[in-house]
Image 1: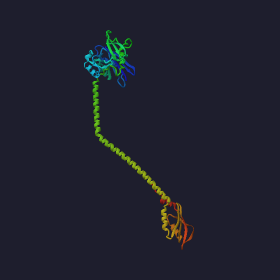
Image 2: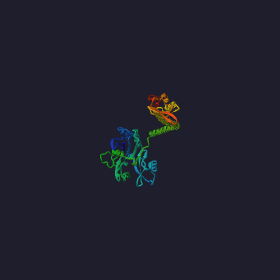
Image 3: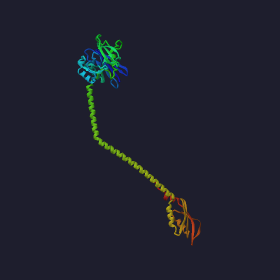
Image 4: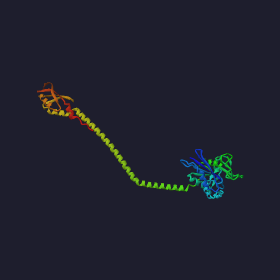
Length: 399
C-alpha cells in the first residue's frame, strides 16, 4: 500500500508519495502569510495521483515551529502509561509551553532509564491539515514530530529547523533519550536541517520521505479522532445492520418451526419414495424369478409331451383282463408289451387314443401258459404326433 509523507515547516509544505519503495510523486508549496493552512494543503495535494484501490496512509512530520518534545519531569516510577497520558492531556500547560491556542498530546513513552517522554502539537495546525486530507478522502492519518523520525542508533546529532537548534541523543534502538536546546541560533527560517543539511537534498523533502518509513511502534505518534461524519455514518450503518439482523432473526424464529416441519415432510416423503422404489424393485425381481420358475415347469411339462394324460388314456381303454408288462415312451414314439387272453382286441382301443398315431403290432403274438390259463403276449408300437403335442402343451411366455 502507498504511503504519503507530509512535512510541515514554518513557511513551507512538502509531500512525497511512496509506493513499493519507490517515489511516485513529490511536491512542495510555500505557506503564504495570511493564507489559511487548509487552503495551502489543499493546493499542495491537487496534483496528487489518485490510487486505484486503496487510499494511501498519511504520515505528517510536524516541524519544531508547531510542536514540542520533552521529558516529563517529576513522574513517579512504575506509573501507568494510560494514566500518565490522561494526566498530561488534562494539564498540558503544566508540562509544555503553549503550542498555539490549543494543544494535543501524544501518548507518553517510557525509556529504559526510567524517564517518560511525550510530544505536544499545535491543535489548530494539525486540525487544518487533517481536515484538508479528509476532504481528499485520506482518512488514515498519523502525526509525529519531525525530530522523532528515524535517526542513527547510539548517536548525538545537531538539528536545526524552524529557527530552533537542538542536540539530540539516541539509544541503541534509535529512540530519543536526551534533548538539549543549543545556545547558538541560526537565522530565522528553514535554513537548518538534520545533520545531512550540507547535502543537496532539501530538508523538508527529506523529512517527508522519512515520514513514509514510520512504523506502528514509532515514538510520539498521535492519531486524530475519527471524523465525526464518518463516525456517525458508521454508527448508522451498524444500527441499520443490527436492525436488519434482528428482523431477519425474528423472521427466522417465526418461520423456523414451519420450515423444519416442511423439511421433515419432504425428508419423510423422500424416504417413503425410496423405500417404495426399493420394495417395487424387490417385488419385480421376485415376480421375474417366479415367472422363470413357472416357465421352466411349463417347458418341462411340454418336453414330456403330456405323459400323464397319455398313461391315463391307455389305462382307461385297456380291458381288465389285459396287463401292461412294459412300456417305453419318448417324444416321438412308444411301445407297450401287453399280456392277456385276447391282446388283438387291445390294438383298436389304443389306436383310438388322441395321443397315439399308427399303432401296430411288432412281431408275432406269442402264447404263454400261466398255471391253467392260456395267455397271449404282444408288442404294440405307436408314434406320437409332435405337432399336436407342441400346439396343446407349449407353455405361454410370461412377462
